[in-house]
Length: 322
Ligand SMILES: [Cu+2]
Image (cartoon, rainbow, N blue to C red; front, side, top):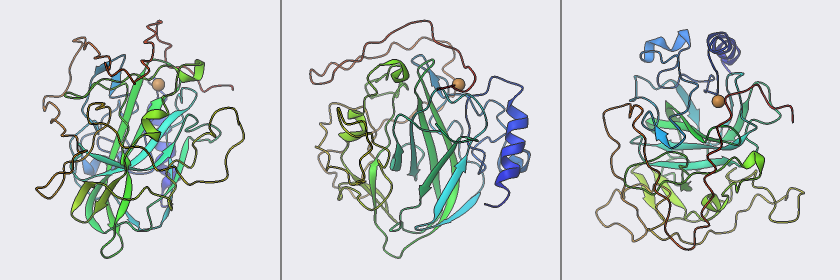
């Protein structure tokens, strides 16, 4: 891919001086510190840091407002390989690739569960732009990450893309899972250090109701995606440790609106289907500072409440030996 090696080298040089976690280096994310990205907006030299840690949000989704762009063009069906800086990968975790039209509501179309980044150097995510993707002059494409070990964190990078898609294209996906990030108006969900035995909360991924992206926006409903890479890395259920060969996802059960862990886009038309969750706007003032946010523990009886182990968080550390 054009100049991705340069991106990576530049990124690695920039971030090794500081405590480096991960940020996307293959494209110019909002606030990218890579020199060639400066034309798109002010650099954020902390781009590899999470937007929330230990239950405290420090930045909004996407970290920053949309800069100029698009910074990249993709075609429907294109295979994409995204590289990240050689930072701490916290023993993997859950990653998703999503699209958004408003940087608040995200439709995920590629999910890597529990083992994101493991076994690749630099850390890499390979995915396919959905073959049925509609065209967009400008759309946000995002990476999100819930680290497997260390402080409980949520990472989110966004970039503006243009898409050469399919006329009348309809893409189905799922609401992007947001966890370890207190989003106003939704219940806070923390996923424990699943690298060390905590529940990885795959239910948050498996119980999602499909949503749909067309040229008009994101709406509720649609068939479960079967023809893209979504969930291709879902571990085989229960006792079978061998990976399943079938990428087909069981159609998830509808989620009650009260669970509220996920963000579903408002409907474009005026008639909103019943399972839509309205999403409050994020505060426009940026840092929440050090004000402790009390995580709201889900009160629904069905939700197995993950024990919030407040062990002194492991700091960022070098890549796992495992
Ligand atoms: Cu880190």
